[in-house]
Image 1 (cartoon, rainbow, N blue to C red):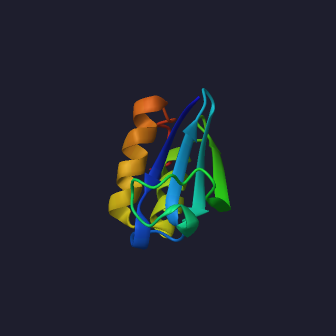
Image 2: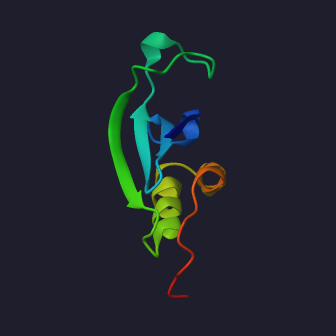
Length: 99
């Protein structure tokens, strides 16, 4: 399992998005910045509270769209693209789209 925390700050609801990948799933978790740990990107956000998440099967034919759509609603399209680049470097998403 691979995991990465994106400390986005003001440009994301809650400020943090964590991406976790396994062989068959991708989980994106929106978290609320833990201000008791500090306000900088270097602050430890291990205890940040989870707001909500999305779990997507990599074989879902709309996996990439679902992940990008969720991430862009939680942050900006730029950050959603950065998160998806990282996800794609860890797992292969199904390319069968209806378009």
